[in-house]
Amino acid sequence: QTRLVESGGGSVQVGGSLRLSCTASGYVYKNGCMAWFRLAPGKEREGVASFNSDTTTTYAQSVKGRFTISKDTAKDTLYLQMNNLKPEDTAVYYCALAYGYVDTFEPEDFAFWGQGTQVTVSS
Image (tube, rainbow, N blue to C red; front, side):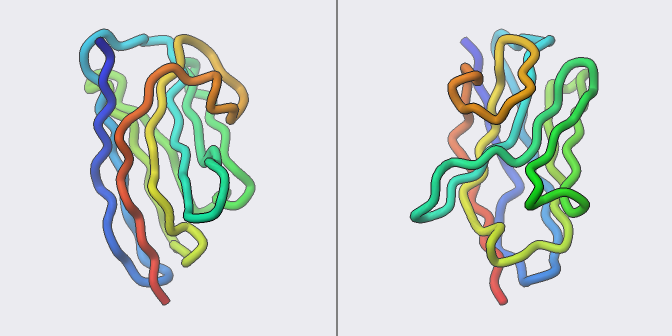
């Protein structure tokens, strides 16, 4: 059984920073793409950043230059460093894991999901 657990969410002011973590446990698909998605009230789920096993990364245009995704393979932990946060970044952030390489932000391409962590940015 594969399990993903996120942590690191919270409330910050505009311009602040947060670092999210996602630790995989159980059977971990080592070659699987890991990604961060977010869901804001009244909006569709949005892919934020992804990290493939060949270390290629992909970012949503809205977070480029502000967010950095990284992974500690030894710890099976994915990170999302979020800087210069804006109110529009407010959402529940979810970690996701695919069986293999994924170069899209299609939720259907990811097999496993965490429970989510809330990020709130206030002005």
